[in-house]
Length: 338
Image 1 (cartoon, rainbow, N blue to C red):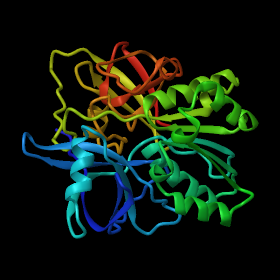
Image 2 (cartoon, helix red, strand yellow):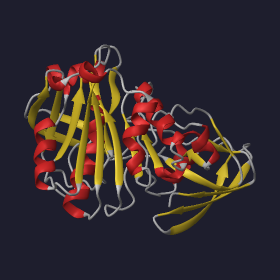
Image 3 (tube, rainbow, N blue to C red):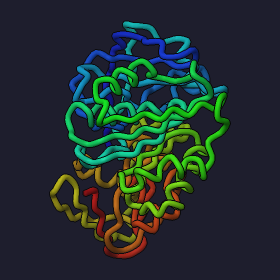
């Protein structure tokens, strides 16, 4: 059985952002994280005890002394409505460690960021980090329904005033310009087609941005996408490593944090469960293929994923796999987290 690493976070402040969004500021627990990562929070439920939901960090590890997540209500969002209605300063929430791969490899790079609605949350973390701790230039295209829906409007304006040569923010308001389309987004992105691109927002918006960047010839490896799906299982519960004596055993070589490891890999055991049981600090969050926190690269061999709600065909073609859903197909497999 692999141990679940969780933390108790005390809410220091609840900050209203817009009419339907708020931020939770937590007393600093000393957790390390990267710009663009998220927290998985345990949300109480009358039906099943608790559910888990992922919320991006809008704070920056290079600027802010406290962790902060920003949450926007959705019509049927059990977790988002509970947070906006019920959480107060002094409350404690249980959280998994910060996770996710929606983070720039260098804060000195030129970045083209696309956000819509609450998709600004991880993007804001990246913006603040680049401006405070890097030398890169940032162009942000930010779409919302109307002016009142713009989260972090005041903070973004202040950052533009402070960094006029390094930060450009292009606001797109549906109430004024209509829904953004691939051709209009392509026109906005064209001057910055050589930049590294990050996309977060509702699925139709992200699809339009993907098409726009593809039309401009932006290589897939320079496009990073953040996707979330409501979790059905509960990653706060202990995960059992099922190692049957009769299971076929493969061999796996894993490169993680610069070190190489080799293990026997029972064919009925998921890769993430194996690594955690062997004492490796492998990244993860949902454990059910609904986020990309456990994403790794298949270097050699073949694996089968039991579930995949976040990786598209291009990701799979690039060798990206979800460790929490992967079983060995070939006798020898090589995986890298680098």
